[in-house]
Image 1 (cartoon, rainbow, N blue to C red):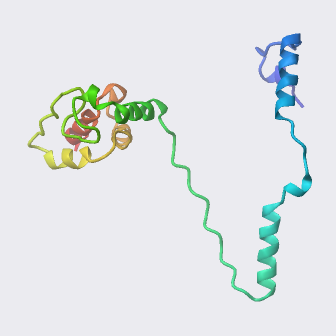
Image 2 (cartoon, rainbow, N blue to C red):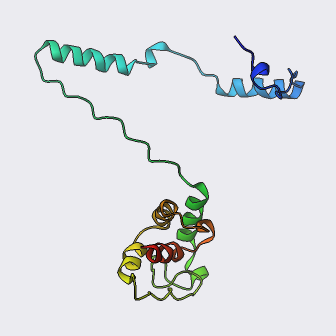
Image 3 (tube, rainbow, N blue to C red):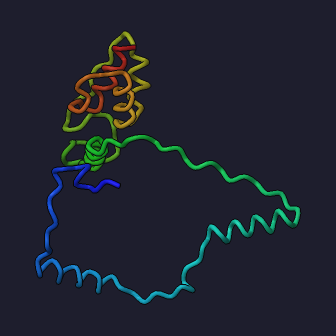
Length: 160
């Protein structure tokens, strides 16, 4: 059996906590400590299995559980933050009524649609910025992180 230091030689050595750290740890433990009553806790998995066994023994039909949801992939936190900030901009900042989308923020007019692929751009513009970012990522569009909301739609339309 290997030790952590054998696997990662740059690990710091054993350090003794300061008295302030020990005091803080005791305070945290005291603050989070509650009385424990085992009757307050139930093994819900065991209860469900027992119910299934009883139903099966009684001749009832037992349905299979739905499969667990598939992971949705990695979330780009910076993009989520940008989208949240964009949605939260006050009408004063954008010069428009809240919830309208006639302009693309800060009083700018929407980018003109190009004749070639205009229907593609229109359908792409109905997507959220996060959805556009995912499509642009799959298509290998460069400079995505610095693009405004409409720029990925334009770049995707040019590529199609």
